[in-house]
Length: 313
Image 1: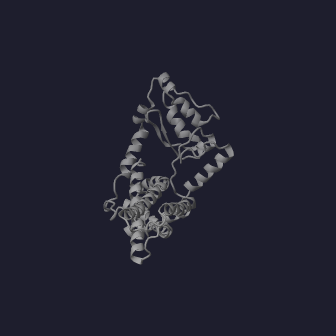
Image 2 (image 1 turned 90 degrees about the vertical axis):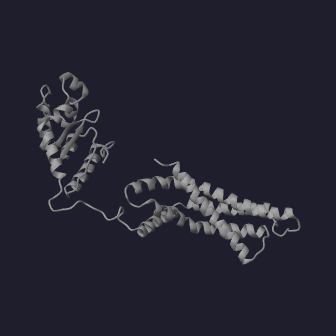
Image 3 (image 1 turned 180 degrees about the horizontal axis):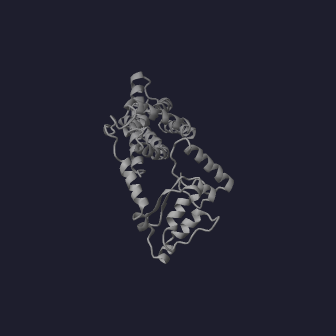
């Protein structure tokens, strides 16, 4: 926990530390950084890990009742003034180990710690804890991830489902924009499909279909960039934590787009295809619909990849 009491009054800070203490009493270990603690808050901690500027360790060990072990350790250094009665041990500790005090005393508290019995005790403890129990083999995991590939895919898909469901603004804007663009292109390409008497008419019909699908795909993919940028930051954090691999995430990212893309393609295809007066046969409309869906998905994947490359930490 990073400075859990910062910005709080004395009562709120005491409540926080009481809660932390209750959790510790259940057998759990909590590591906290603390800034200018009061006497009561400082006394709530069992052990102290104190470092000076430059990252050198000064003290690592138990505080003791009323911080007497810390006080005894620092008071043993020649020239360190004794703590006054009722004075905050945390404040006194920082004062006597400051850079200015080191220069005044001509000592290096980092070197003092490294040559102390406390340091040797800590190293012996680390060495003992690092040795495996006799008769027990090395810790081994059969797979890198705790879940199977299919379970990872389902978990990522479920997460993406709720991410999209809780972002109605993005979904609603996409559908509304699809309807507007289909009406716009349908108006521009009005009745192009029924004109086939000249070669230019055929080229106009082909160009209208190409432009309509291309424009919708690019604009649809551009609108997803802000969403993907946020999602990718979460992905890098969760992937680093070993929750899932990149492939299940990519599968979920494409799969969750499929129903939305199908709805877009139906709206866009029916409106534009009708207004452009193309032939209403099942096969021809299916090909137009299939290519539209496939193109939207391909552009979405390419845009996801490009967006991810620009948001890598």
